[in-house]
Length: 294
Image (cartoon, rainbow, N blue to C red; front, side, top):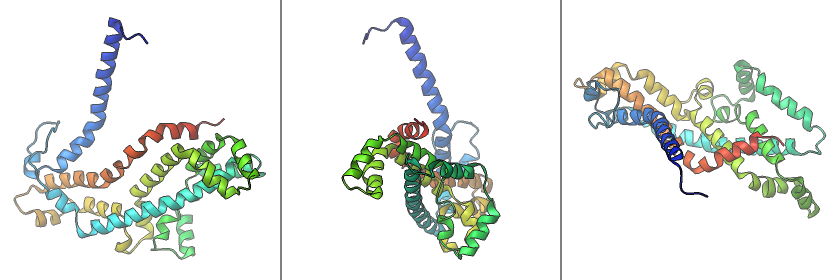
C-alpha cells in the first residue's frame, strides 16, 4: 500500500475526520447535556442562559434524591428479574422456532413460516390479549408480564436466516454419529450463530427493560411493578407540591421538576447502555447474517 498520499487525499481524509467528529458530537451531546443537567443545582440551572452546557450548573444531587425513593430499589429488582427471566424464555422459544423453520426437509416449513409472518402484519389487539391473560388466571402475576410478549416474530425470522446460512452437511454428519435434533441445535447451530444470538439477546433485553404498558395493564400489586412504572410516577408527580415539600422553599420547583426528568432519563437508560459495548462487535455481523437470505 502506498503510504505517500497526495495533497487531495490528505484534504479528503481531513474533511472526513472533521465531518465525522462533528456528527459524533451532535449525536452524543444531547445525552451528555441530560447527564450534566441532572447533576445541576436547580437554582443555578434556571439562571443558565446558554443553550450549551459543558459542566453541571452547580453540583447538586437533589434530583437524584427525588428519584431514588424506596420504590426504586423494588423496581430495579423486578426489572432485573423481568429482563433476565423474560430474555431467557424468549431466547428458548426463538431458538426452537428458528431451528424448526430452518430445516429444509420439514414438510410444513413454508406454510408455518407464512402463518408466523402473518402475525407481523395482523394481530388481535389489546382486548384479546387481556381476555387471554384473564382466562389463564395469571392476572396480577409476573407471568402476565413474561408470557404475552415472550416471542418476537421478527427475531425468529432473523435467527432462522442465520441458521439457514450454516451448511446442512454439518447437521447430516452429526446425525450420522447419533446426534439428536436437540444436540444439533445446542452443539452446532447456536455456537455457530453467536453474532445473531447476541443481537437478538440485546433486542429482547432492551424491550424488557423499557416495557411499561403491559405491567400497567395487568399488574395491580406495587411489589410487582417494574422500574419504568415507578419512574413514570415520578415524572407525573415531579411538578406537584411534593417536590416543594421535599426540596424546601429555597429551591425553584419548576427547575427542579425539569432536572428530575433528566435524572429519571439517566437512571432508566444508563444500566442498559452499559450492556451495549459488550455486544457491539456482534451487532453489524449478526444483523447482516440474519437479515440476508441465501
